[in-house]
Figure 1 (cartoon, helix red, strand yellow):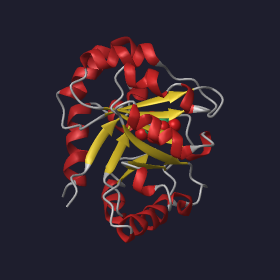
Figure 2: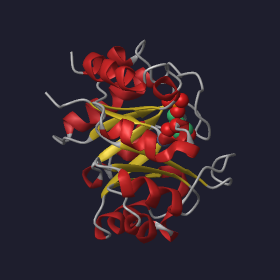
Figure 3: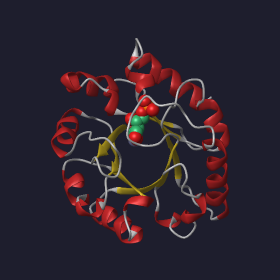
Figure 4: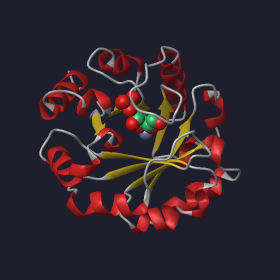
Length: 220
Ligand code: DX5
Ligand code: ZN
């Protein structure tokens, strides 16, 4: 069985205490750092860019999973790789030549993944799946943390799981948005294996214990 991974979203961290929160993730059961980059065009919010990622990388002892919510991400792939991205995911909706962009990510030395917005049909992935280390399914409209999980995600995971199995691949399925201890088991059951959690982790009283709990529930 594929090991289930937890990727706390640094969007919900305390930016004034970035080193502290990075070390919390280092010392927890988390597997990756999830890094949300927003440009104010592709999504209606601006988050952070290369200098902040470099600052996290300086202290991080786990891989950086960089989620690009930016238009034409192909313009910046090498720069994100240079500041320490290990995995880079780009939105299907954000780049015209997806195949070329995924190759560009791999040529820059990173693992490559595709993200789908909630209304983008799963079947657009059929021909590109062999190029993907991971597919990230949005379970909210991207742009902000702390939103409510959308239930349509379950059937989308099942469709994607079938497609991956039919092609005999081991592509990861990552879920991003509104993941909590209340839905993670059902998400695993539907076929997901990698989980982003922002506010559920960082707004909790004991983030380390919250991460441990998510990890345990997902791997039960
Ligand atoms: C939103 C981001 C998410 C966000 C998740 O566009 O892609 O990664 O940080 O936050 P929560 O877990 O609070 O929904
Ligand atoms: Zn994200």
